[in-house]
Length: 119
Image (cartoon, rainbow, N blue to C red):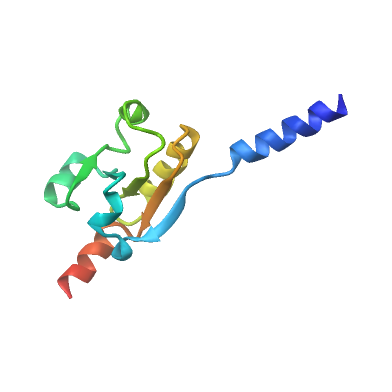
């Protein structure tokens, strides 16, 4: 019985640990998504005002947010960003819980990307 308790504890710790990583958005390049997908979790209005090339908009606030990921390959890297980093951090944790193997949250968000682009 003790063996099963320890096994259960080890499994829950392993499965409960987040697999997501982060990378500053200014270090991101389009080459990063050659084998993955780039997700913008801002609202459609924010997305329409401007977004990174090749990004797919999946609104964090949408009722069907998690359902939109059902058709994506969980073995491919997923790069996720928002305006400043709050929503993308939450989204990265959700994607981890959905079983995505490599989730990279782009720190700083679209605002940081545009600040560098303007300079």
